[in-house]
Image 1 (tube, rainbow, N blue to C red):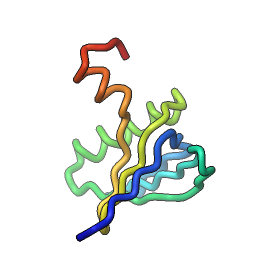
Image 2 (spheres, helix red, strand yellow; image 1 turned 90 degrees about the horizontal axis):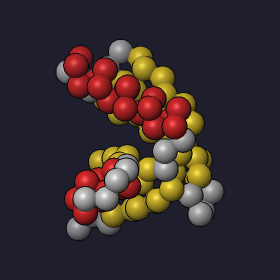
Image 3 (cartoon, rainbow, N blue to C red; image 1 turned 135 degrees about the vertical axis):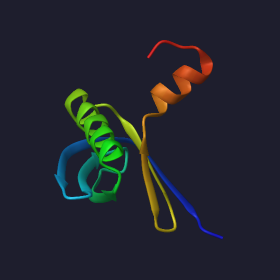
Image 4 (spheres, one colour; image 1 turned 135 degrees about the horizontal axis):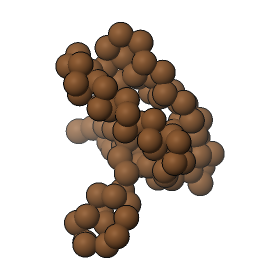
Length: 90
């Protein structure tokens, strides 16, 4: 069974696209993490949409949550997700 690693309040520092890859530098959280993640999207419209989203998060300094299980990593905006689920404004 894979363990799940969750780090809240991470901020996107930089987003660089290269071919199918999107390189994302992140930092922050209560434990002062700093690292890089590479996402790969072979579908061009999906690649562009994800890059735009990551850049919006970077520009707005949106706190996101880093979630990793096995070799799968995700960044998610919990405030937007939970706000929509509970009907709260975001």
